[in-house]
Image (cartoon, rainbow, N blue to C red):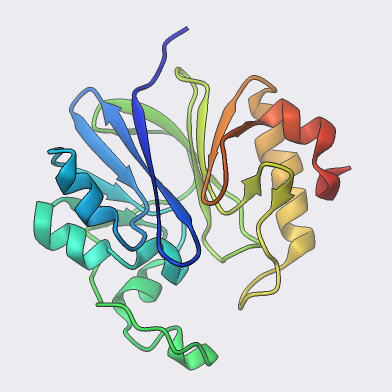
Length: 206
């Protein structure tokens, strides 16, 4: 079995994970919490691509900084774009949170197969925690970069703007479970888990 090379960083007050994934043509950074830019720089890695799982502020705080530092391409779902480009997006919901705005370079939507820097990913849209939430599945590596959809023994919150817990649970069952019990899930918060472990023991999915 091919073993993917990836590195994990946890940053910001919400202890948000991001992942550096080594693809054949360079490194991909998935999400950019506070401190991510410094972390990547400290590793002496120059990512060519920053892909966002969703637009919640704890996952995108360092996007503009990463863009400036590495001049990498930024890809996200169309619904994520205003969350990173509109300075007042979160303030309009009553959150006193501000990010430095940045425009995505390209958009990513659900698709059975898309190559990012030479690695093929199936892209799954699983809303319910956040509109436009994406999960990136490398079939070859049996690895799912899942954002805030599925956690070890938990699932994403459904009580934030645009959230819908039933939609989220159905999406996990219909889209993620069929990927296979052996798939490792790299979540937006907490430790890695597997689809099988969560299918059997996750209290939200029984």
